[in-house]
Length: 305
Image 1 (tube, rainbow, N blue to C red):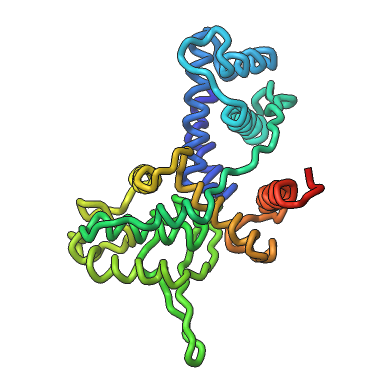
Image 2: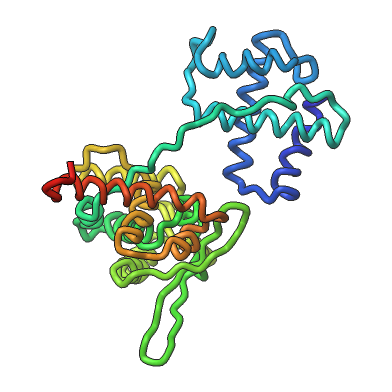
C-alpha cells in the first residue's frame, strides 16, 4: 500500500532533497488533506485517477466543500506536494502515477508589500524597560537589520553572533541557516547591535533557566522562542505603531530588501543577504522600486501624468 511508504517519503524529502523541517511539515499537512479528500470519495492513493486529481483541485477551490476555500498559491503548493508523492511512489516503488500531467495553477506575481521607512522606525520604537520589551525590540531590530526569515531568527543560537575586527574597525555578523540548510553570514547594523547587546546583558540572563541553553531568543519559560511568538511580537509592534496594513515578520524582510534597493544597493548584494538561490527571485523587489519612481515622477513632473 502507498501509505506504507509515507515515512520513507518524508525521509527522502529531508535526507535526499535536503528540505527544511518546515517545508517537510508543509508536505505532511498537504498530503493529510489529500488523504482526507480521498476518504470522503471512497478512494485510495492507488485507485485515484488523473480526473480525480482535477476534481481535488476544484474541491480545494471550494466546490462541494463546506470546510474551507483555498487561495491559488496554497492550491499550487498542495498540487506540488501530491505530485511529488506520486512521483516518489512511481520511481521508488513502481506505483502507477496519475499525476504526470498534474500541474499547479499559474499564479500572477504579486508584489511583496513593503512598509515605508517611517512605518518601520515607528515599529522599532518599542517603549518599555521590562524583559519582554527589551527582547521584542531586539527581535524586531534584527529582523529589519538582516532581512532574515522568521524561522532563521528563532533558530539562532548564541554562537551564531560574531564580531569581526579589522584594525580599528569591527563588524558584527550573524550566521543564518536558510532553506535547505544553506548557511550565510549577514552583517548587523549598529542600532540592532545595541538592541541585541541590551537583550544579552539585561534580559536573557534572567530568562534563561538552564546554563546549557544555547538558543538566542528565549520565551518567558526559558525555552526557544517559537515562530508563532515571533509573529505575535511583530504584529503587536505594528499595532502599537498605528499601522493599519497587515504586517508579519516577512513584511520586515520585504522592507529590508526594498529599502536597500531604494538606497542604491546592488541587486546581487541583496540576493546574497536574502539567501536567494537565484537573482530572479530578488528582482521582484526592483518592481516595487520602479513603481515608487513612477509614482514620484507622475506626481512631481509637470508633464509626468
